[in-house]
Length: 308
Image (cartoon, rainbow, N blue to C red; front, side, top):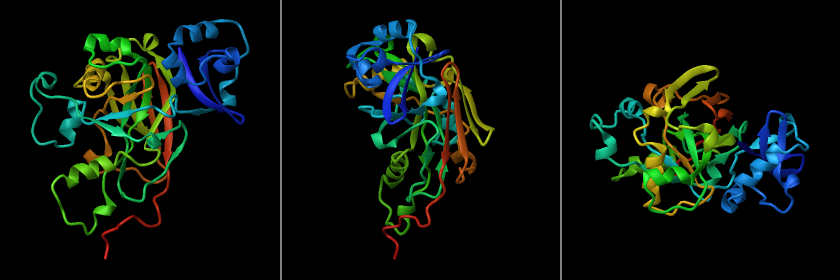
């Protein structure tokens, strides 16, 4: 089942995407939950599937404007370096151990909800960086509250999957003229994940039963039609279930939380081939679909608070 959030006329709504169009859930179920996030919290997936299977009116996909499937996740996580080849291309300071799943831990970080952007949106170029990069990622959406779960239990906590583009600012204009301190490089990297619109998501949430094995999906990024990243999710260092289990011991996971699970090799930071204004980023993940966004033009001036 594909769940989409969208704007139809002046109204924001959500529904099930079918071959015959979209079943608008609030129309078919007036007293039901009013959003995908609310539906997950209410445990309403079975009822929504029944509505989608019933004969009834449909809204043409071409008549709506898609939004991120969950525009306001309670928590939005990213994962740093969760593919071995990406670790190598970024020269992370030595080879990974033979089995990093047994000898290292995931490196999650939080992003603000203002980073979420819709399919098709223009991603604004932030005033604090001159180098903008792309990262296609499989994103897992939590469907039930969980804490301290095992990887086996974690599978039941995932409602479904969507595509995320972890757009990244690779340089920090606000570092110009700054006196260097320990950890500056880490915080500059972290700041580069926070800009408005830097995490486009979509085109919809595909439920876990329809996706099947999340560790067997082809994943690809094209820039202006040119393939830059091409891999399979089986190459993740930590699986989706291992990531959910790890995070559930750091913080309680809630319905609607989103976990972007890391990007494969091929990013611009490895080659110096960064994005230019107007570049079109098209992410594709098998069994989910495509997510396309455009980078806006660079600002006329960059933010340099330490400049003399």
